[in-house]
Image (cartoon, rainbow, N blue to C red; front, side, top):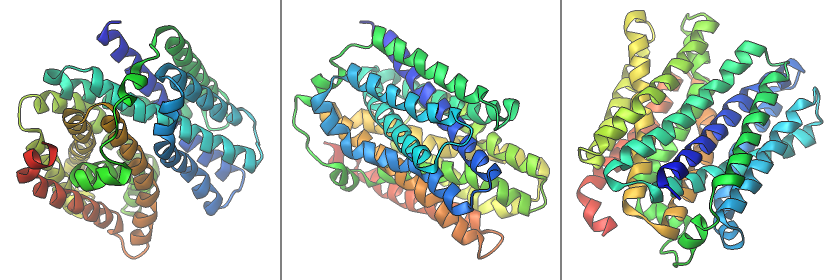
Length: 384
């Protein structure tokens, strides 16, 4: 089957995952808040999809040994359908809702891990940066579509849930019709050279890049509007700032991917980290400069998103087969960890002072920059 067609199917599949994540995360939080649930219950329910993604990372190799790639995709989209269908009930019991959120996280986690692996396996090395960047941009763009639907229809409406269910059904039908069975099986024939923790030792800069962006993404969605509103911005405008940051991420990933196919990818990866750190350091000043803040937020989103996209590109450049699946399983696990740590650490630092959020972002970005700088002279030796 034509690789371009398969890539199109995989990109559409991850776009549906992005829409499911972007719609259900704020929808559940808003409904629980409206029902009078406490912040602890809302926080725990919001964390369950991330916990499901960590579980998916731990299970993915075992699943690959027992199911074909097509079967796994069908099973995972069925889990996503079940997880989203629970939201059709106006007041589902918390235990049912918790189970549905965990199932959704597992389904989305396996889909993302395998999708990233297969996209890297199928794409041409000369265009790897552009294709992986398009994959990441479609995920982010559809993730942004979730809050937009809630804004349009309202949190109490069933329309956002029905639309998410319809896209998942369409993805299920497309996978049933189009995806071959042997994508995973061919990769799993060879032995793995390292485990999940082994990948962290082999590629610390790539792992910290993923961890940072998951941290960044969760903080922007959950706490950046709070930070901006505490510095005098209206709540609606503060919420818009989070969308602008993620919009910059989405719009600039393909140009960054194109650039990564023409320059040294490690140096570009480090450059994105340095730019993100510089903007984080300037944020306490920028937050009061209206004319400079908005373009800076776009660049911040682009640079932070580039850290994640280029990590995926570099993983695909240096790993193949079962090692590539293991690497992307580690990516899924780190995404879950970063999504859990981001709001916790940033919230704790924000309680200590008005600039707690920029401090948290700078600390996380500094770790990545140090690791990326240290990885520059070791590239050939580590990946040979």
